[in-house]
Length: 290
Image 1 (cartoon, rainbow, N blue to C red):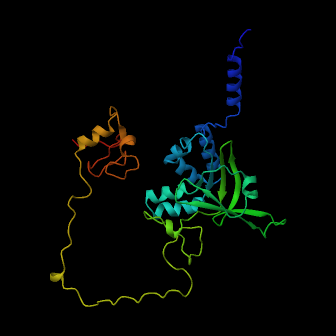
Image 2 (image 1 turned 135 degrees about the vertical axis):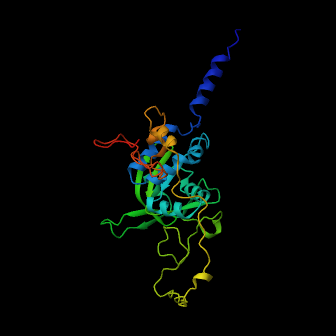
């Protein structure tokens, strides 16, 4: 009796296993670049720039083979205020909490149960997806909210494992999560979507400080403290040979490559107070003194 060959059966089982595998490739760099371009063209340029120049790109590309993300873009005005007031570490932490580690399309945002927590790249922070009835819309449609901030521009970008939606503000860290100089949401703030400045703007909550008393007694010149002079004279004087080397036709650097936009001495290609004479070609009727 001939023995059956087990090789075809093994190959068949291997093929079935490969076809039923749920392995997903990581997000491609082209998908991330397309999402950043969509953010910039939709009015969320600062968030797109923040992703492009920070470690968020590495997180998106190397988080894992089965990872998927949803970017909730804050407004440019809110990010600009945050960037001006807080250090880079705090700025990056706020960016991380706007990246949910879950793929949420526009349909998913509207159908997900209200109050569902979603993890983010900031390990200590989960976002709460909810809904509210929009009284402005004629049909009273539900508006998706993320930690109370409305999603006003859904579907900015969408691919297999990455979705991008625009917010109407910024997701401020909670007080229990505030660290490294990150601002947190204060209960008395007028606008909860903007970083608080630590000042209560409610009318009637403050009174102007009293004017300081002015001493009108005459100042005795002999008793006045001398005004310190700067350590180096200004403007800085440079020898004419140095300036001639910069503006000479044989110079490799030239004026534009060396002094453009610096505001330093020699920033003008035609004159120099240090040399005391025009540096450009002599005009008609002018003769250099011997």
